[in-house]
Amino acid sequence: MAIVEVKVPQLSESVAEATLLQWKKKPGEAVAVDEILIEVETDKVVLEVPAPSAGVLTELVAGDGATVTSDQVIARIDTEAKAAAGAAAPAAAAPAPAAAPAAAAASSDSASKAGVAMPAAAKLMADNNLAAGSVPGTGKDGRVTKGDVLGAIEGGAKPAVAAPVAAPTAPAAKPLPAVAAPVSANLGDRPEQRVPMSRLRARIAERLLQSQSTNAILTTFNEVNMAPVMELRKKFQDSFTKEHGTKLGFMSFFVKAAVHALKKYPVLNASVDGNDIVYHGYFDIGIAVGSPRGLVVPILRNADQMSFADIEKKIAEYGKKAQEGKLGIEEMTGGTFSISNGGTFGSMLSTPIINPPQSAILGVHATKDRAVVENGQIVIRPINYLAMSYDHRIIDGREAVLGLVAMKDALEDPARLLFDL
Image 1 (cartoon, rainbow, N blue to C red):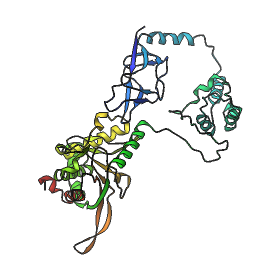
Image 2 (cartoon, one colour):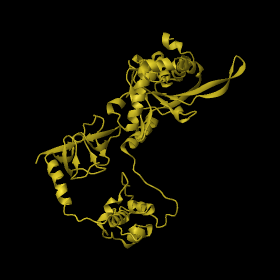
Image 3 (cartoon, one colour):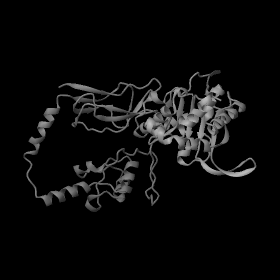
């Protein structure tokens, strides 16, 4: 027997522990080398744990939802058990008597329904920490009803498992956690579901509260006529796509305009460290991206040195990784300034919260045709409202307002970006 240990990947220095999500394999099942066995969630990213060797999963040292640390052993694989397991299958199957197709189908259908909890019953079982199969069903085909669960709760004891076929009744990817508070016997038609925060969501909440409690946040607004950018984008879109293999979006213009302003007013790119102001001589721009697990902010390193095409490709890459949960910790560490684009969801105006330890963040919104006054005439222009929140401890209103005006000027006259005006 040759045993190989499955360990938690190396976590970053800023991440002390992580949570196991759900095992994709059970003990006794064969695994292939590099096959993903489980995902590990930290407060920043979700990491995949592949099988280090092929074989049979013999032991799960830590179960679903367990808290783990770097390099901790969470499972073991027997690399020599694969052949034996494969050979045993035909022998076990050989003596099984043949059954009539109709009878087999009926038996299978009945077994698949027996012990299955109805939605309301499943909710009550999860809330009262009753294991699947612990409540016998009296409903059609042996299904567990809400009344069955209430009867078991009132009886104060867990009934014995009625039949071993109850095991397949857990289709949910993640079991609901137990709730300590008592559950009303009559929930009616107003169901609720209590789910613990993921590590990522809890970390987001912690950082947002930290930002509001430690920073003197103030927001300044301005409106931008996006017509020049839209015309430039329309004019060069086809040739840009053909040359670079990616579309020319609006975010690259916002990033370039932000860097343009940060160079003029370096305090917008600074951060607070105790009683010191740290002025960064580089421009690492965080781009807020929505993901199924929550908001993440991957970083465009040295954005001042990136071309429009580089920015668009990187943002597209980050967006795809965020949706797949494959952003690495190093891709979200650091940052000197952030941009949040609520306009992609239709937001008209917002007051973004600073991403600590940064001191400013730009909020971009939906571009809409609006009536504006130009040279005494009312005209229609595509307007975008920009909002910049800043830490008033180190950034005065003058720098904040002029910084946002610099972004506005760069967007309304993109040629300024070429000549650094």
